[in-house]
Length: 375
Image (tube, rainbow, N blue to C red; front, side, top):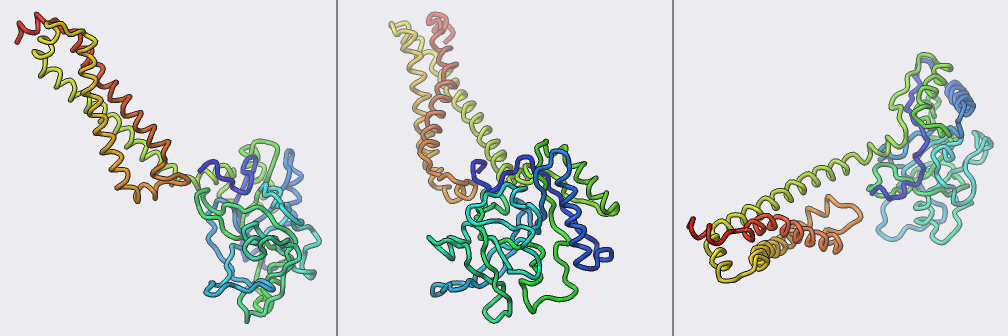
């Protein structure tokens, strides 16, 4: 799971959640003024490389969807409505998050209110609606067929981004500039609507992101001393948090597996030790009649090997029976992964021989005369 391409570079990125209080930021110009001043000051910080704002943070578990229409696209029969995950962004968001630009361009200062509405789409979005085509210049609009919304022109295509954990399904996404969010919903817009008054701040720096957390807080306080930030963290922490359920399952299963191995080793040792103790007279007679100590040791190890063979057969059968349950705990691998099963069989044989080695050594060191006298 850790080898999955997230679609962005979490290293050296600090993120924080903010929300502008409505009673203080009552108008869109007030919100825009705060956001622009914040981005300007953040990019002036020592070590800062890029700063941006977004309505949804990757790896945060964004499950929102927006309906839309694609100009000229004829859906196949039985297809459901078009759904994709939306995000409004501001500043150098794509550079700050390290999201690669595949085609076209990202947003600039010219993409503001009152000009041509633009949108950036993800690779999966582009491949779905314009397979083997250049998406640049294509058009989409929000809502349903009867919704009176204006067309937005695609100006760029970026890499797919994991919106929640790395093992989650990659969703289709599109991005809009905050300044154009209100116009994009057409007649559905309301004078009381505010865009960009909450979301996430992302800051990429050359310095370790932990060192930028205090600078980020101080910058926000320098603009609005009363505004508190929440979820101040590095993007690596955010990704790690999204991996927590899978990591917990891994630790839990590994703990049970270790306990099972210890029980298996102790069980094999106990059975072989009991077998040797109950066969002391037989082994002493064999040695008195000329059996070599190596032959006695081999006899005991063969008994352990037989137990290992039985255990492997039963274990493989159990793995096959539990394959449905195992599959729900795995990602990117099959419950019948041949190399893993082969290594498991080899491990069982090695452990069985190791558990049998101590009783076998004791059996080979018997004194036949003393053993027969004791019997």
